[in-house]
Image 1: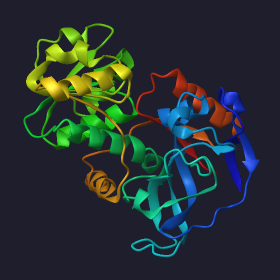
Image 2: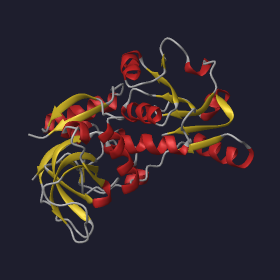
Image 3: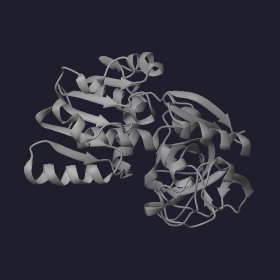
Image 4: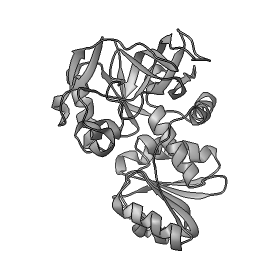
Length: 317
């Protein structure tokens, strides 16, 4: 089968289309024929070598995690799924031997969800990593009914899901984004939208129960004055500064600092599926690429350049 692989770290040019053998699903795994896939920041960060501390240096590597497709085979012990089922999901994070930019992929059954009928395969392919990241980030910060939350980087992949999930929980949402994302954030349900090029979000006069820095752009220290006395700050970047802030606030403060460490699981994926099936949450796909070597290199380049509205997807022929 055709798959995107690479033999060394570097820019998008290291990616190539190769012929590889199809993996057989083992116990608890499913083999999926990929219909569409999507890119996340973790994909290009692994490719450029900036995540070797968790991803390792094993080569060759495959690229991509998120996918939507059709189950072709189930390994022993898989229940609730069968060949022919349309599904969405993700391959195991940091697994060099699997990737969604391929004609087929293998993953654990708990990393897969039946695709809601209202979603196309392209839409469904963009859901798993960003949607779970948004859901778990909001939960870490105890965002719920009546809570006032600021989302920094709200027009990106995680942010567009976070706006909708926060609104479904009954929260009041302030979305911070660039000028290109203002209309989109408002359409997704944000109560207030701050164009960061026209207004400094750190000078907001509101006080928030939670600030989620999804860009990430601001430290806890820079956001601390925006929080209630027991408010929560979360960053998607596990930096040394954030680790120190988390330790300090745990020992001495009433405010809380968290860093997102995604934990894939069937329970959260099912909860996300319910929101998708009801229409409370809908993916926003800003651009779709065909499955080809040059196109996947361009996909990585555009994603790494940043300022993407919502998600970028790949559609298989």
